[in-house]
Length: 96
Image (cartoon, rainbow, N blue to C red; front, side):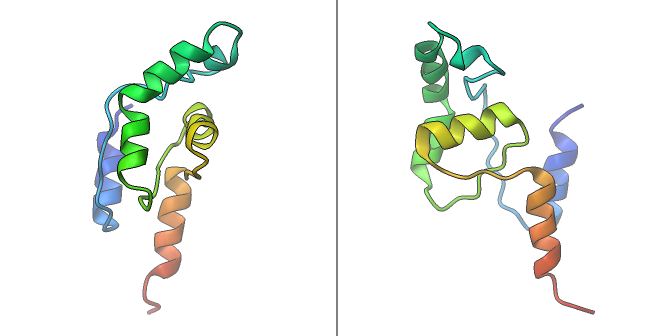
């Protein structure tokens, strides 16, 4: 599995894509286990949180539950799964 097919779908749907490097920091239950919260947020501070702070209006695509939870918990923002985002675009297309 790779990111390339998803990126191609998004581009074809008209999205401006900004791919982030690294991990959200939650990684399943790792970030919520006792003693791991600080590490989890430090990882999120590397790429995820600066990107969220840089564009408060951007749609946040996060297919994984951990990433979606981290985005919501640390910034109070919603994120969507690729299927949800594509469905929204499909609903907005001009009717034939």
